[in-house]
Length: 101
Image (spheres, rainbow, N blue to C red):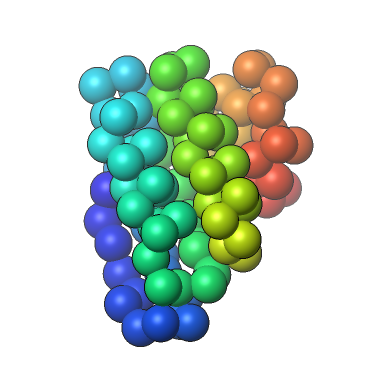
């Protein structure tokens, strides 16, 4: 998970790596949790390079985005791979994640 944007009020971009499976789930959740406590008001997720995903990775993404929303952060997507979209659709959480079409 790469981070960008460090100014208060500025957007903070988090890049989700290509592998969104159980081995990466905790790191993703922790990065989203840290973003929920960061001064940036807007969080932008870039998941355009995700080419592997499992239920644990998607669950970490859902739980992390919930933390962001509870912290009052504005969440948007810079990109979403077809693979991530397909996995989220299969698990029934694409709408909850507000994935772009």
